[in-house]
Length: 171
Image (cartoon, helix red, strand yellow):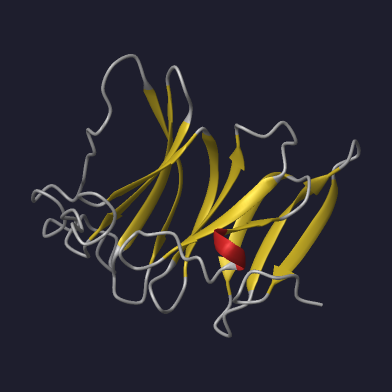
C-alpha cells in the first residue's frame, strides 16, 4: 500500500500483489508471518502442509519480484518444521522461529540465515533453542539483541526471553 492507503500498483505485477506457486502435489500453504528489512526486501514465512510439514522462507525485492540472491530462486526450505515467526536484522540476516518436527520435545528453535539464504553457523552453531513455549513471536532490537515471547505451562504464563546477537542467552 502507498502511504495514503491506496493500492501500490508498482508492486508485483501491477496489481499490488505477489503470489507464490512453489508447491506441488497434495499440499496446503498457510501464511505465518512477514518482515521487511532495511533494504526494503520482504521476507515471508509460511508453512507447507502435505505428507511432511515444511517451513518456507521466501524473500522478495521491494518491487515484489523474487530475490534470486536468496536461497534457491528466493526460497529457503526448513524440512519437517512448523513455522512460527520471522524477523529481519538490520544487516539483512533472517531469523526464523520454528518447531522441529524431527524432535519430540515441542521446543521452539531459532535459526539464522545469511543474506544469501545459507545457514549462519556463527549463530550458536546454526540453531538456538528457546525453551518450551507456545504462541510465539520474535523481534530484533536495533542493538542486535533477539527477543522472543510466548506462553508456557498449563496456565499459559507469559515469558519473554532475550538472546545475544550470537544466539546465546542474554543475562
